[in-house]
Length: 220
Ligand SMILES: C[S@@+](CC[C@H](N)C(=O)[O-])C[C@H]1O[C@@H](n2cnc3c(N)ncnc32)[C@H](O)[C@@H]1O
Image 1 (cartoon, rainbow, N blue to C red):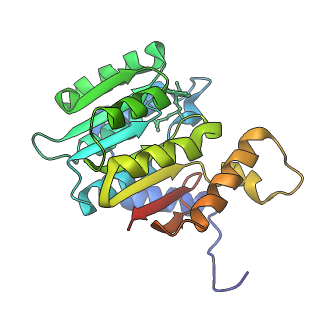
Image 2 (cartoon, helix red, strand yellow):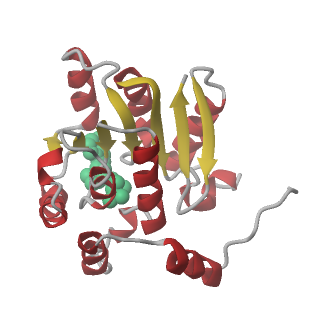
């Protein structure tokens, strides 16, 4: 492929981090404390968190929803960008992980802006739609089980206003999406999801390749 991708070497990645990252102390603390957690790689990269926060600011987000909270890293980045009275609906089914998220939200001073919904996320999203919240959201971040990405996306599109933004994480699936020898279920789910959005006339899209890749879909 031409025109022109600069390879991101470890040195260049470190440079980007050093020259751009403004990570709030509560998030740095969470990242450092969970460095050796077996599922630490679930967290988005710090640069992605900062990017997500910028997207929240650019969309003027007041009401946002996150699918896949883990220990609160990405939700805290977004919540810090919300104006007074702003809300983030945080969907996860793990009591254990989200207990740590609550601590991070408290430490970052955003606890009052986040409502945790502990349940399978599809149930939560369907419940929100049934409760009349269609069109009421500005930003949706999808970062949970890959098999349900397309389902989360469809619900998110209903919940977003026109001009709202869906952001889906892990759309590079650690590079496996482009490896034709890989047929594992999650890789296939992400490939199908990426194809679906490429063909979807309801949105304008772009794939930001930092971290494990974020697919952005702007609701037309
Ligand atoms: C990749 S982690 C989220 C990481 C988080 N966005 C961050 O960057 O800090 C995925 C999370 O999705 C949750 N999850 C997986 N399947 C789910 C489901 N069906 N419903 C609700 N939560 C789910 C897991 O419990 C886990 O906390």
